Amino acid sequence: MKLTIISTPIGFLGSGRGGGVELTLNSLVSGLLKQNHFINVVAPINSKLPESCSAANLFTVGGYEQSSWQHQDYFAKTDNSKGSIVNVMLEKALSLIKDCDAIINLSYDLLPISKTLEINFPILHLISMGDESFEISNIISKVYANYPYNFAFHSKAQASDYPFIKEPIILGNGFELSKYTFQEKKEGPLAWVGRVAPEKGLEDAAYVASEIGETLNVWGVIEDEDYASKISGLYPSGEICWKGFLPTNKLQEELGQCRALINTPKWNEAYGNVVVEALACGVPVVAYKRGGPGEIIQHGETGFLVKADDKESLLLYLEQIDFINRRKCRDWVENNASSNIFAKKVVSWLKRVIKEYE
Ligand code: UDP
Image (cartoon, rainbow, N blue to C red):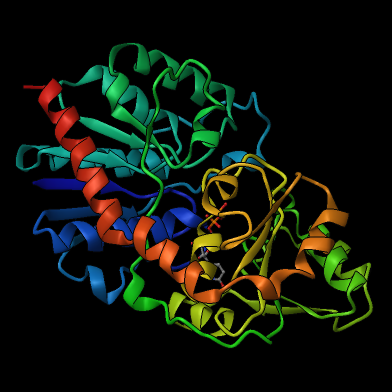
């Protein structure tokens, strides 16, 4: 197939500001290339694709930046102006359709979704967030009424945020496993990975690490400086070790040396890439049973799931983490979330949708 993928308009690919969508795009593209599909990627200016995606055509475009929906008012209005980056990306993707079988949209935005109603061409939407915007939920519901197969989600929990979706297509996510090295050693430090922003709940992980008297290593983009410094101020200097945002190869190397990942989302996490990345390195995860992580972690096998926001249970289970067999963590990812498995699921989704247009 010839496919065009629209990236997130938040940040450029490689900046980290696009969160999990950046890695999703990379593994999707490399999985599809391995299956000999022809891929265009449309992304914000300065975007870069990793080596594994070098056979894809990358089109970068400029435009007005926008802020991510989770940091806007639920009832905020979309910026529909011509120059908004999502609009420019959409226009570019549409200019390529003569030579294309379908568009896969990874942006959580109104315009690409509403376009589905306006043209007789398959535009598929892999929704990357739970319900974070009234306008977007509304347009999904409107388009879904006519094109129910054009939407897919990462987890059942995420899809449940859209109650009008009756039989959601759930794709999980995929990871280029050759990039993650399994590490056997159990004695390392504690890890937390993610965008540093309130919906990620870093404060609960910091609390738990402090209670057991250990440093918490934190990797990720500091999206909200005030939030980060508020948490930092709660603990003696050094108790939180800020490691910054690292590219995947460095991140996995350092993360793989850790004893456990603590994952404490405060929102309905659509999937939770970092959970799978830790497992891929053999690092078990203790997480709140909220959103995607609740469907990824096998309680007692690859880590532990505790009631959301229950910090004391988090603490108790963290103390049991040595009972987890690190090899089983890696095995779960190989059997459920490789980029090949993900690309195969995406291809069957594409075929089903393209058939509807024939
Ligand atoms: N990440 C990274 N380097 C870092 C920390 C995080 O590349 O130092 C990436 C990580 O690989 C993951 C993303 O940031 O793909 C976070 O995605 P997740 O799905 O966990 O949450 P989101 O940001 O989408 O809400």
